[in-house]
Image (spheres, one colour):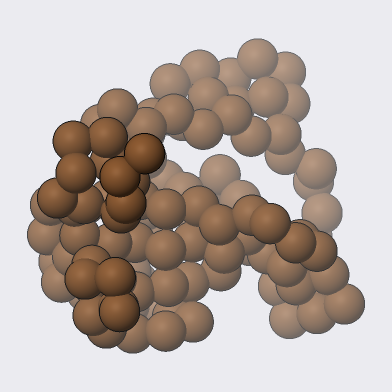
Length: 117
């Protein structure tokens, strides 16, 4: 999983503390625990995605560039670049642990959300 976030999504390793790893990219930070499983994503079809409620959204400056890097490195997209009904353009993929990731253009709102609060 750490390999996916560093090699495909451009996160940098900040620190390792036992099994816990701190990753960062711009002002985004992720804490991850390696479980040491050697199963491939296809072998884990029965738990491909966490059951409900988790979508990781990353806003990027150059959506096409990010998409091209990921595809060139061989990761399969769940959905290619598309403009959504709420006005943002994105593409989607699933990480090795089954988390759904939406990589999108920047929100026009200062709060970073695609809607006003």
